[in-house]
Image 1 (cartoon, one colour):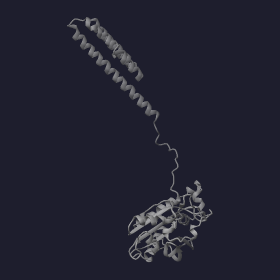
Image 2: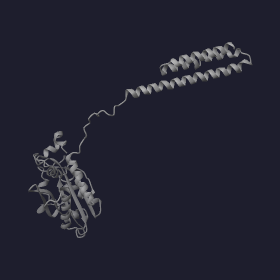
Image 3: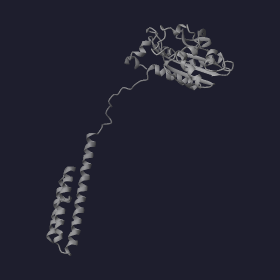
Image 4: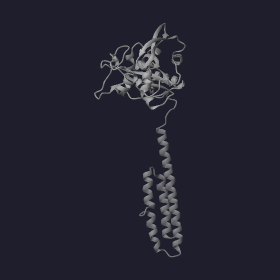
Length: 329
């Protein structure tokens, strides 16, 4: 055996021993550079091959390749072992006992007003209505004039309506959406309009300056008050069950005839909505021919419906953000 062959065998055994005791991936990388790097021990041995005879070079070269492959194999094997140990240690450290109780995380709840809105809309969508929406900041035209409010109507007074510096106002009802929708669409139509409304009311147990309404509008040929009554009865039956209801004559600028709807609840009559046939002047304002088309509308306060459904005695509870109250729903 030549001197180089002996050096290669010694290198092989030394590398094997060092690699087997390496305990980190960083140490494996250090050993790779020590034995197989450009300035490593194998490279130093191979530099001496120029001194060998032509017959010895192929033999020593083959041995050198065998040693290199063996060292590479040992390095890779030990690297895989160390990586597996690291993964096992990490898994052990992060092990979760699935039999232990989870950390309590309280669930959010749907606000009772939103729940009522969803319930009302589900009923009307089931009856063929489309949900529509519109701006809360409105012009006098869409909030009053197009809805047949006379210039001296009390609702236009600054004591009742919140006017803005630019001449606009905060809508006092969701009826403004009816006019906008009719301007952009041709009959027949059936829409349900949920949304916030604003009035200069003194806040007390039954009044709020900001409240929610849902209005419906139906326009078609040949609609009558009978259709309106049937729609209202069907809605209230789905919402409250088979309860007695009654229609009382009333007045709204944008409907004629108009009525208030009461239902018997817990032994007394409660007003739950206003309704009526769309006034011909409103139809004319949007370009509909009142000789061809008729329609009906109805509006209800979401807070009022929710208070009836859940026997709540003070509207202010909805806006107090009291979890003791909200968690009951």
